[in-house]
Image (tube, rainbow, N blue to C red; front, side):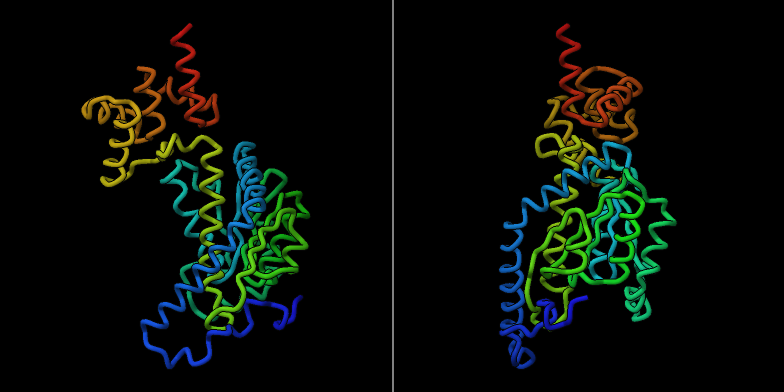
Length: 305
């Protein structure tokens, strides 16, 4: 593993001297500017991110699963991303999961210490029956977290595809995974506190990965989240606006279709466009693997015949 002197995220930031003597306004400016510079570095990693998006989408298409593996901030960021996908895009909750050393809600030092347990990472992969259809993405600023390394090693031994998101160059994780997203963010204003700009960059990358993958799977139509499951009042209002914009139909007809579609926006959209039943709409969507645009194009083709 890398020594601390080789981990840029552990080094001393040149602007950190006297940080505790500055005004709150100046501290905030430095935090903001440091994060802004780090975000610029994401642009150069777009080809690496795109390669993982293709593999992510392929895993979903082939009936596989995606696993985010991380400890501490990295693991919790993976959880935030995964938790939003079922409601936003209609993804089954078991399609994108998180492997974390312990209770993700536990912020105690006891949980932090578990990141050193490579064997626990290996066991977590075995317990989930991870195999060749699955994608396992390790997330670790250092690129050296034993729990993550152990999980990735075990996943590879089961034939799973692997990727990594890291904030240092030349790490064990970079060498181990099939696809590496390396975004060196450098020293933190508080040395080693990678919940700062390294964490910010990881969150941006996770947003990019899952969003682009869902777009490629047809869960987005134009700029609308047509995979949405409208399970509360706010989401139902959003669903009605979406369906009105895409169909031009009246609110009453939309509300009726949405209720009949069990508040599945993609199904309601197909029902309204094709003037067909819930069962027929679901069959069309299933045939086109949930891709809304392909489903609507097929419906249009049927009408022309």
